[in-house]
Image (tube, rainbow, N blue to C red; front, side):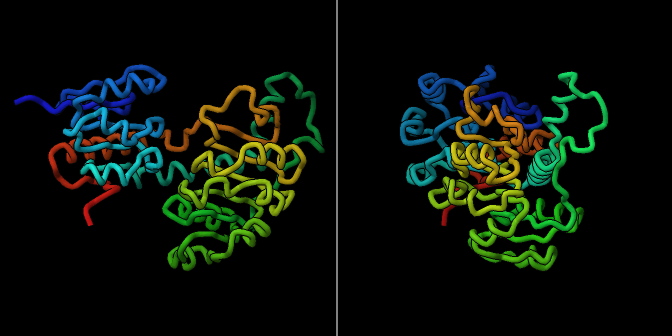
Length: 325
């Protein structure tokens, strides 16, 4: 019996990839960069399943190129804004994602960015490496205190909850949050207060973004939002780059409208080398590595493999974005 044909758009952890290769006629894209669009469309032709990353646009053209036998698209990410889910549903293509397993790792990264930006960790490290450290400096690299401050969480889902727990439990922070619905668990565990967006911006010392990207959240952190924040505030985005307007963030940091920022995501990705953000000392930028731990990436690979293989077999997906209603 012929094994199902699948295409995997990048190397992922062996915890999932080995199973896919054992059970399928799998081609795995070997390069560091994703396949060009025309190459991708050729590679997926005739596939029953495709394992994608956020770098792949899964739209009607993609599904048409794959063919009528396409059963499942397994996205190696929590988010799926790269996929036209209504179109997939219309065509009977199952869509999977990888939630849950990267919650703590992503919240850890958000807090690492917060404390790094607040305490000048990156510029002070560069100061040492550049040979400029001559003596203990009583006025050098003075940053912000964390204990007892106010953190504003935008998006109180799993990752937002994990971030709130670290800030409230470890640093006695007051927790404000913005979400489309109340989170009773956060309010009970962390005395979190649900407020409107403007109140959060006005009162928070640290603003950490954990919402998804959609038409209502895109560009929500713009010039007006940064003007509303305290000039001692730190902005953290470990969710999606287009949630902030990058030029507006640059201006806010450059002019001192806010104190600092920490980014694990940018717009575009990767960040262009002539982006003015790279000239600023008060922003920490990481290359989208929040989920980059052994446990998280193995867990993502296992779920992605489960989704792919279950979809090909016509079984319910472990993490199913578009289940039948």
